[in-house]
Structure formats: structure tokens, C-alpha cells
Length: 192
Image 1 (cartoon, one colour):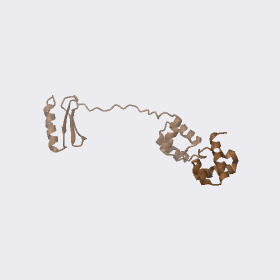
Image 2 (cartoon, one colour; image 1 turned 120 degrees about the vertical axis):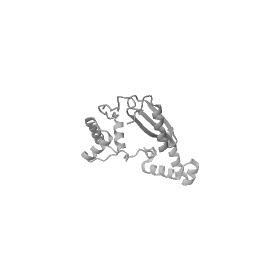
Image 3 (cartoon, helix red, strand yellow; image 1 turned 45 degrees about the vertical axis):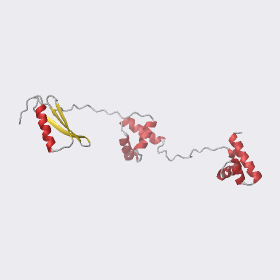
């Protein structure tokens, strides 16, 4: 017989012989609810009642999907190459099944489904170019950090850059930067 069952049987025998639950609890180092639980199980089932029972729940409330729903998700994924958001809306629209994105992700992860393959054709970007250096210069201002602004200018033909840092973005600093660009650009500047 198992050691745990033997120990519980000792508790029951002590309780039967003494009739004092408090004494048994103090002597054996257990609580009254524990002693009552094993006494009740012993009364109902005898020695078989002293066997430890599984603490696993009989139902799993966190289990959101059944195999039928899992198969539906996997089928939609494989036939239509849908992501989790689209799967969620398609399940709701076509099958009246409401699942969270996290649940759909768990189902896909459980079945080791690879991420959606995106088939996008690369569109050539339009690069602004001018045939003559200094013909057009792009300028921009960007806040880098607290009290730190970067002014940038790029020539459209040569991609030559001029950068300056200022503590504030003011009209005075902008005019100062424009003067620096006119001075530093290595080609003749033509006014328009």
C-alpha cells in the first residue's frame, strides 16, 4: 500500500480510538478540514477513498476551441492564405463564430502554421533627380531630442548633404541654415 494511504489510515485509526479530532490534528500536524476530508472519504469508500484524486478540472473553461473550429481555422488559412484578423472576420461573417485574435493565434501556433506569405511586387520608387547640381535642394527639419533640432538639406542631383543642429526651431535659425547651405554647396547657386 502507498505511504500516503498508510499515513491517512493512521489518522483515521487515531480518530476512531480517541474520538478527539483536535488531539489527532495536533499530534499528526494536520488541519481539521484535512482530517474531516479524509474521514468523510473513508466513511464513503473505505480504504479506496484514501487514494489521492486528480485535481485536474473535469471541464476546461479556458479551452476556447474544439477540433471542428480548429479545422475550420486551418482550412481557411490554407485555402485563402488569411491572417488572424481576416480569419476572425471571416469566421464571424460566414460561420457566426466569435473568437479573439489571441485565440486564433494560439490555434495557429498549436498546429505550427507558418506566417502568411505576402506576395507583393516591389514597386520601383520615384527618386527625385535634377540634371544639374544645385538646380533643386530639398530641406527638412527634424526634432532629435529635447532641445535638439536637425536641419538637413540634400541636393537632388549630387545627393550632397548639409546638416546643422540647433537648440530651437525658429525663423532666425532657419535663415541661418539657408545661408550655411548657400555657402557650403560646392556648385554655383542660381536664384530662380
